[in-house]
Length: 134
Image (cartoon, rainbow, N blue to C red; front, side, top):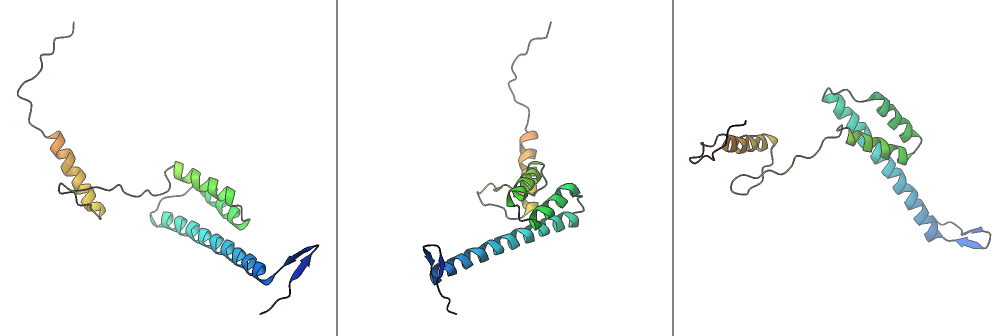
């Protein structure tokens, strides 16, 4: 497909420049579509977890996506994260040998062992004398 260069005043836009503009437009459309898909998946996962999302925020997010207002979408996503609505990645937990666990159940079991060992220590042999309060 060959296009003739377009003249805008004294400026000439060539084929290469037009291709780059089309590529940039396509990238913006792909980014928007990806964001809308992630937003839709997020709200679907909330429904599956039977957590009731803030419908006011959800409605505002959908309206902002329809209007292509990325600033509004960003602030809504940030509010959701601050409120704790977004799931956070589990912290890395290691066993006694230094190997990291990959499953949540293993992490919980390791935390249970850790607190059991700390909280169930024998009483110290030498206790410090603590005077009675007067």
